[in-house]
Picture 1 (cartoon, rainbow, N blue to C red):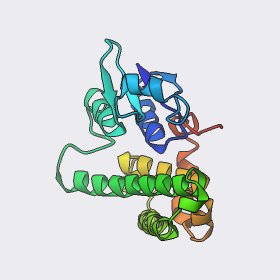
Picture 2 (picture 1 turned 45 degrees about the vertical axis):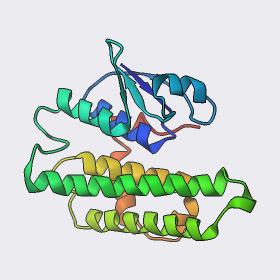
Picture 3 (picture 1 turned 90 degrees about the vertical axis):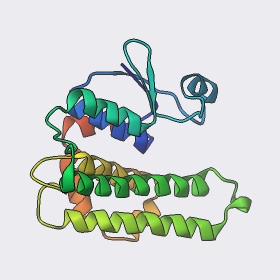
Picture 4 (picture 1 turned 120 degrees about the horizontal axis):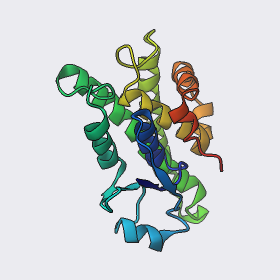
Length: 205
């Protein structure tokens, strides 16, 4: 399999962490949405990453679909995401809070670093950063509940998304992280980043 995209993207990273956590080996094609637009569109016509190219040539696009595939083929015990019931809903809820933080942090980073200054609307920047901070605070509250993991007695998709959201926010929107105290979430990130799947997917650029 080939995972397309750079770990700089939180969506590529979370897909990579899930694949590695479940023992699914893959190669990487490190294409950038900024520098490799034409090459990426040949894989995903929307021009987004990640994509996962399977052994037979089939391509799965979007981190949701990649993670869904990984869970289908390699998580028979439903360790990362229960098959049904309240536990599944709780983990999905937390996972989507983490995903929302990633999306809002990406929006903030774009406004601060990519959009020409004369076109930046500060009201929009303030709004997306407030949304990201609110999501991080919710994740921090969960992490402060005293357990090693956000839900249950082992790592789940919720922990993966929460840590990727924290780490991306720390790098891409440092002003947001400096203005808030997410101590418990940071501690969870420190623990998880000692695990091979997390350490192997940290962006080195």
